[in-house]
Amino acid sequence: MISTGMRRAVAVPFCLFTLAGLTASLLSCGRAEVDVDARSDALADVDPAGQTIEFWYQYTNSREAALLDLIDLYNASNAQGIEVRGKHVGSHADLYNKMLQGIHGGPTPELVVAYQNQAQIYHAAGAVVDLTPYIASPKWGLTASQLEDYFPAFIEQDNVDGVQTAFLPNRSMEMLYYNADWLRELGYNQPPHNWQEFEEMARKAAAQPFSRSVDAGRSLGIELSRDASRVAAMVFSRGGSILQPDRSAYTFDNEPVRASLALIRDLVRDGAAALERNRNDGRVSFGRGQALFCMQSSSQVPQFTVAVDDGAAFTWGVAPVPYEGEHPIQNVYGASLAVCASTAQKQLAAWLFLKWFTQPEQQDRWVTASHYFPVRRSIAHRLDSYYRASYELLDYGKPEPAIGGYEPVRALVVDAMEEIVAGGDMVAVLTRLEQEATATIEAFE
Image (tube, rainbow, N blue to C red; front, side, top):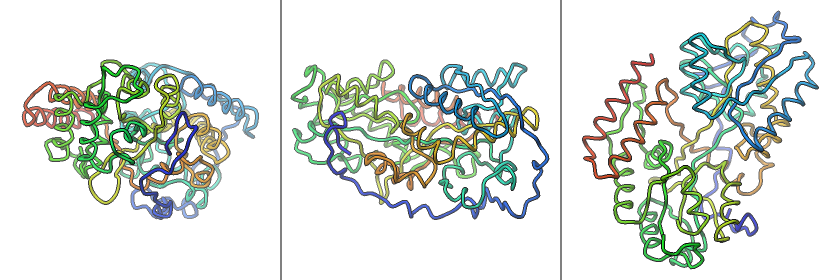
């Protein structure tokens, strides 16, 4: 969708893919197979009635308000008399650090927001439980038809070697935001399909400022955030990877990584791109008409709407990250919810809230307020045109490594990006990055 503050819509110039492409069901998935009829129900005699569970999260503003409203609804309506108490504990990093403190003797909640790599660390330390028995429970779990309504690829992101360390409430995807009016001034009627077109457009934007720019003295193709997810998105879009298939080592010294970082380095060197000095500088520059493109999460559409409306008020749109190959491989990410180890009764109570939270009615309310993608097929048709188009791209989604120790690796990637942009030797930097990143695997085993 192309929009001026979501006021004017034009067909998005990239292919839409049908949801029929995701035909595999979790029920037939080799790694996370669940036969709800054949398993004995180890949870049948557990009574969660009257339990109080604490839920740690990082959501703020409208997302927190929507979550607390849903928690109030659950507390007033669930048949077991379970009470959920939501608690904001800071950013994702704050939440992660507090959980690590809990693992070493501090308090922990009954339910916690966790990225896939974080959940792996928690599970290895015995701090969160395997949700497979809860999903499979004939009494408390999900039926076969309910499971089929979830996108199996999403559930798989939290499943390692048959252990379901967390369960998903939503997902996001890396997208390319573009200034459609500026593109037309540069002679283009659609966003870039591949990275060669992206580079060409970015360089032209640096040489020809946007006519309605708030400050025509500053003109960039893109202002890129210092974030490992931006690098991963570029690498994935070229068909590359940053982790060996057997998860034994990281792989950074490869052509997709080198090509991605070389593009950033060359555009910055030639004044066609910049790295953010402060968080969200890229979105601000985009909104002011000073940067032609911005790469960010699909969940940031409301923030981009405000940035453009408060800035240069132009027509803008979203498209897949430029890609090489037949399909637009997209970086798909998002935190899930993990049930912390406590008592059998509290664990079941936490699971029941998590199950309820991902039911279609609650999903509809949550994604409307949060602007995340839903994880249930049955409500995808309710999304507006922008989200529906982007949602269908999830068929080609690829997640970042769900492996313990990925948190420090993300910081190492940012350091390497900055060093290469500053003129560091590409081979030496990537060789060191690969070695240091791989060392974290052993450290977190």
